[in-house]
Length: 253
Image 1 (cartoon, rainbow, N blue to C red):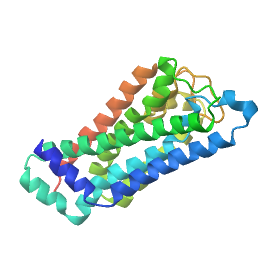
Image 2 (image 1 turned 180 degrees about the vertical axis):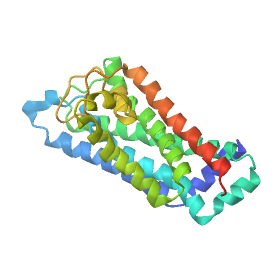
Image 3 (image 1 turned 90 degrees about the horizontal axis):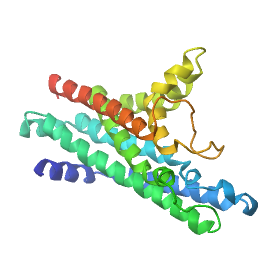
């Protein structure tokens, strides 16, 4: 509990988490509000709980950057040395940081998802936005779990790279290029995409819904159902975190 308190104090003693939270919520909810307001009255059937989450990836990336910064800034300014002197085993301190940062990311994810859905419902009260099925609840409330696990992914990557610019660049290149380009490789692309973590993680949110041009992308034929996709995504994120913890213990601070 002491380690959790320490990590919470360290996290909120800087401005970057506050700015990241504000930007993530404002960007995601703002885009949803614009989309909802621009939906014509004769096209309200296209506004569903799933389509209110079309912008969740924008906030997701912001919170992943925040998670990476929580690690790399400590290495940059040398404060990680004090932490490791106080906790020679290193792993408990890093796990406490992961719990605090990932928990915050999960909370922000839930806030953005619920606020996006709620604001769309206020703007377009006649749209079919009721949460009547488990799939619709997953469309909205499942977003927070993806934010939480994505933060674990970012922390693991940051522990391996340790430099802010390098960690952020690798993360963004992977998210925006690798997972977009690998599936288009002839012959093997469609098989590779079945195992790309963020494509599979997104399947947890969108699985079972019809594909819409203005909603989160739906990829047919993935090997896992929604909950299997979440477990697979969690395993990938935890494996990367474990690799980062091993690297942190073996290398000098």
